[in-house]
Image 1 (cartoon, rainbow, N blue to C red):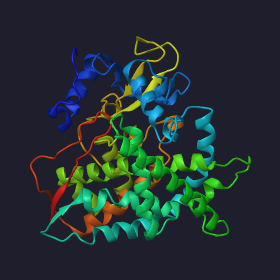
Image 2 (cartoon, rainbow, N blue to C red):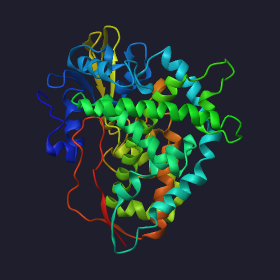
Image 3 (tube, rainbow, N blue to C red):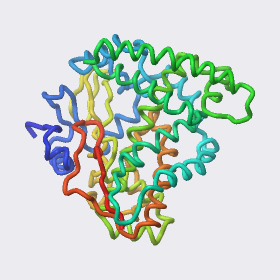
Length: 403
């Protein structure tokens, strides 16, 4: 394929036909427009995501325009030049992951289920049969934020304030055109957030409730813990990585059920399929469409030679529809199981999404009551407006009529 434009309206509406063609014609594609390699086969994406020796996550190590862009953002970031958690590489990532994993054990995550279900029920309380319901604003964009606040141990008085500080910092850190005023606001927000986290941790030092902040600041078996600066950076990361992708999982998943009422009916009648259904939602229309890696040493993928510093987009949305792995890949089928649910939407290997279990709980907490309460769900528009981004996929709004 000589030309590939992921920002065309037709691609944003439905990228999968173009990705199928790219996989068939040039599965390891060098894009001059993006100055990057695009991988669309499952096996190639898996090879890159599992090997953090040859393929690293820190974009500042890339050559060309992408690396320049990342380094420029870091130089002006209120967080300093160190990468956020998701962009770190070993040995830094190994150390941070070992500490952070203590706060995301199965026991800790499962303990959040009742609170998540209560939050979801409260957000859905405004949905009424026959009335328009804008799902993104009412539920999808709010539930992940509430869950993160609960996980941190925040209350209604400080939850919105902490989120606002974190997002102010992140917007300034990720926008190369951020104004001087926006950068000043971000520096001020950083000072407020850092002081709050230290004070909050001290206030709860003797509490039995082991909320995330306490777990991260307590020394583990090896005596290691997050520094106050690392806790600040991780809090900002948590609000960005834990908010957007989960909101889009909720939106894309519900949209898939709306578009396939027979599958919605099956799930309504057989709620034991919820786990498989969520995996199929993630596979069929992944919130994360591409994961970025940088070639650390000259290597080959699919017979193509890549140089150190080259940028790679592992197109997980395409990998999730690779017919070599998923039979009849364009069919939405919640009864897929076992090997047919090996999607890459949460990544793979050392950088597998640590919030994946929470995201699954949130999805089930939303879809189960919606299916129970509403026998039918329809889109209130003929066309969804979508964000023009290569990395993520989902609607800006999801207006529904519930029956």
